[in-house]
Length: 480
Length: 99
Image (tube, rainbow over all chains, first blue to last red; front, side, top):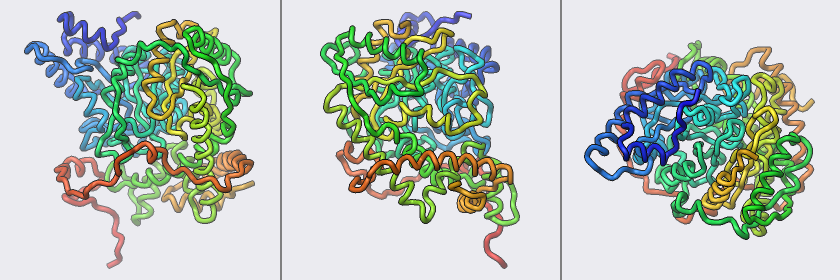
């Protein structure tokens, strides 16, 4: 099957040349989805009415000779934790089955404002909790590269949608690696922007001090184009920053000469798959060839990141998920008393991983344990943020693997949650520090599974990581 | 053993979460593993370290506070349509006050 792969400039060129209309393009994408979704389980809901209405708007603008916005006619997919007015938004959970938000997330409003067409909502780990997509109440997504393998998680559906050419770009969310790791597993560029760079208004919260929205795309250039649209201050999210948004696409072609890339020795210890190590080393060599200077750095608190992350994330989750109680949305399981109704609704509505994290998060916040766990976790978080701050005094970017392993087989790791958590090591550090990180394809394993190289930049240095990723991609990084 | 069945039950009650006996056993084991792993953090001396509650403060110049202005959203009908037991303009719940 070799359906043409569309990038954002190709969509624009075809529309401008009248080779295809926006409506025909949407038809083409829905036909592809129809063909592949049964096998891959990527989309949980489609929004054809809304998509065709938007397509017709674009087609009218073309007919009228109007100037088109930057994402005109670009079919996109949106992770199911991001609110879309009137379109089912379940967070991959039974507890929100049938829920249709009464408003749009700011990122969705901005995408549509720039002419993008929302095709539907993508499958994910329940409430974005997971690294394999196997925690979705609606069944796992299959990795389009190797369908008996996981796509990664939690934004596995969004990564797979782009990898399988079922969308030109997609939005995911990243709390501890949930954009970058599936990007790595499915072989597509995936950017986790700085905390505060992109509005979280309408993002259904998992861990509010860590949650971010970021793009998946076929090319780094396309990810940059989406970022230019979704980034920026939003009065509806008080944590969104007023830092000016550069034109991310315009900055892509700057040469890398003289940039210092930090390689943390602490990230290349035990536990990393030898094939991953080899391709990341090859990726670093490629960046050196492009003019970067390799600098060995220390990130001494790395070993403590997973512990701090799972304290902070679960504590925040236990609080954020208190709202699912069978009163305002989702199905209700009846009980004789109000409390019993809450307990039964939540006990049956949440899946195993969500319950595990609520129990852990409630425990670390409970009387007598707050100082030992939650406060300790926040102090360790400060040390990890300091590791990054100090590193960025010496280097312009930090290079790591995105994940210590490539995509694994469905079912292979579900029995041991701690082992699954430990594989998040290279992504949770940046999540705790709030810095931007992109995962970019860097070769494949001998069996053809994609490997991701991660580029971290300083806070609000998205332009720098995109520039480096773009040069890496253009130099053939994915075929290393 | 860091955590007992009773601990799990107590926390589940705080979180309004009904767990089956089997779930209590499974989560007890998992939490024990995870909390034992988290003990690793005690290797670090964090005395004198200020806890980091969020990373954005340093990067946002303007105040996150805004005027408290009422804006009508006019979504009551849409919101109630998704509720399991609505009685406009309310959500109905099991009786909480005795007669």
